[in-house]
Image 1: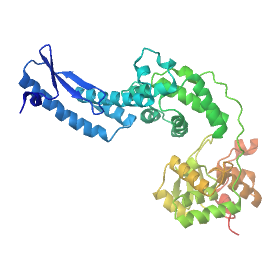
Image 2: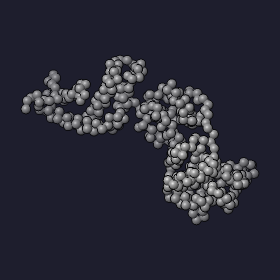
Image 3: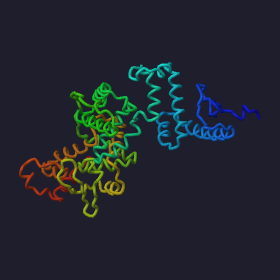
Image 4: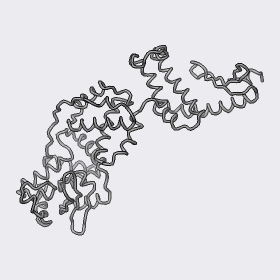
Length: 394
């Protein structure tokens, strides 16, 4: 074997041997000092580096996307592996720059913000991959876990998901882009003013949590938005929903029946306690309700209550699955899960149920001073007599 082949991928400079490997795309060489003047020792170190390089290259080959590369880079505790990953990231970004015809611009001293958009892409790729940008995809969950209120957390999660559809990293968002995003979700997503304000507050909190400049989310004048008024489901629509869910044998059928025959809110249903012995339901206080309440169970939902007591799911799961189901039936934004509560109250009103009894069943505040301050509430049997008059099928 010739000396040249023995010293493949080795380069001697000033008496010190260096590892010198040509990059796969021919764009240059990876050069690293082996810190030895002894050729035999240099060959051993080179062989180990080649073995390491092969392992890392095989690992990274399946993960060319920027976030996967970044995850590997940040999770590696081996300096050699980090260096290889960094080289691969640089190689990927330079290849992108060459393909876009902006390689010279990326290597110049031009300020990043002064570059054209296409010149920013390879730089953004590199910065994101080696951790200099803050991708939403990897940072949302840790921040959401810091929020103790589950309903608040669910609302913020929706807001961040919409934001991540428009931006990959926090550093992309300028005040002007934030303003454009706010206008977009108002016009295209039918989001109310109050929800937008909550989300903007959440974005500021998210930026602050990761030590980013929160000023991009400040001083935005949120114009008035027109939100479609919500309505109750009609009896025909409820019958259609029941039939379709039962045909699909979907677990949602139990949740929907409970909602339609109790008027309970989604959150209350997801935390209810069924008492089969006396056929009553304990609903924990929701929103502005002062206390828990117990109501009788309609005969139509006894089986659903048995099922739900053993197979309860989260509020978010109910919301997401019902929204998907509703859209599949081509119902619009004028109806939602809360529409079952509207229908239930309307049906009791049409039956002639006293308003105070309906209020006790659904957890509304009493409308008069006498009922509101001094009433001990309707008896279980009185509530049962009215609830059992309710039927969605003639």
